Image 1: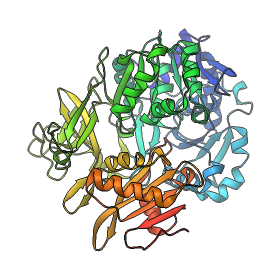
Image 2 (image 1 turned 60 degrees about the vertical axis):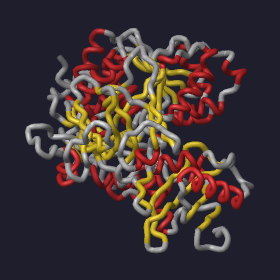
Image 3 (image 1 turned 90 degrees about the horizontal axis):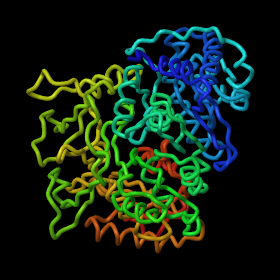
Image 4 (image 1 turned 180 degrees about the vertical axis):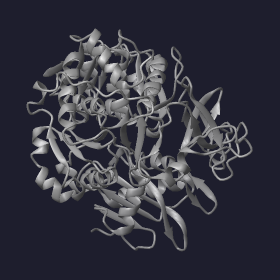
Length: 578
């Protein structure tokens, strides 16, 4: 048995040195560069030797890499040196204010001793040192600048399962990002969960577009490939967003068996891939199309299956799953060989935290995220009292098992609250991780109903923002899918609804959109919003993985820093145009 993830790469380099580990499609098409297990091992040893010149085991190294294979060798270089890797991303020139703010928080929180990146990134160290004061005294290392010729004899550190391998900073969808301390043992166990649930092995082939600094791209793509010993073809997220047909062409070309991402990716393919493009695809090799990281919409997966069935995509390929950074990555996944399940519930009952089958009133459709992985324990708990919720009730999802991380780096109080929860009346159980997600178990499968912190209570009614957002984005064709954020604001001395929505382009009739939104929310939820904001997609705060930052949207709206195209308020006579 492996004791650390270092040992996994060392074994691959010893036994499969010349086998391709990763391909990177630089243009998202056929311009590919490859790297073998042996080459990653040699590059990692060289980077580790350089890190040891300035860093001691346990120090942190910030990884700032554009999409490419350089990140992978740098990450393993940190593991080999015993340095805690902190994946992030270089500031995005098109979203500089937002991306710099996140980098400032991460750099200050982790206390990085070194910064690893490509030469174009590290050459900006003076400029970034001014913008991010916490990095001013760090050692900047260009890992692609001749380091691969040194360090060949370096012996990687003998890490144990409890050693922290890296800090995975949370997306910050509801608050400022926090560094989740993930150990080697956490990674090894979660790869067992992933590879068992998805039936991955040396015969598999993966294609991925997710950013490598995010847990789904790192744990689900990079680490899964190395752990199970199969090759992965990667591309930049931007290449996929620009033209999603590139991803499906890669699956078809390489006869890939696994590929996935958040629900947005499937919706993007449905909307952007033409019938002519579909005629060129053969997706019959695809065995696992995982969907996680944001609310999984049954209608999206049904439409995706129908749209690509002529290309050989099988309904059983859809693989809804649930996970979070605090539990390394994957927690639950669909049963293999079966079609995904969903349930239609009475909306009013669900708002009252009861699971009741749909009747004559309004309904909500929830998708099953599958069963718990090996060694994972799930409890549904009342978040206020700590008591278990009886069957048929909705509560907070609590987790226990070897995948649950050690806590938040440098935050003992937050760690105690989130990672050390105990069930009332059962002191022998746990400790448990409080996920902050609401859900219920049915037939041994997990259904996620929303987030505790995002709940909006209006005149005693508990509203889930994702329900409001789903209604809003369908209200008018000018609104972008997956780009609405609903949150609570104060209006007239009581809690009310605010909503920010991204529009598809210029020249939109704001009054018509506002009217459609008000009508849709009133008819669908019997609620009139207090404020509506239209904005451009680039100005909508999102996490590194593309999830909406409701908290950031709310704070920007209240502080007046949100760049808006048009604003409507319930107490205003007409639209305000900043």
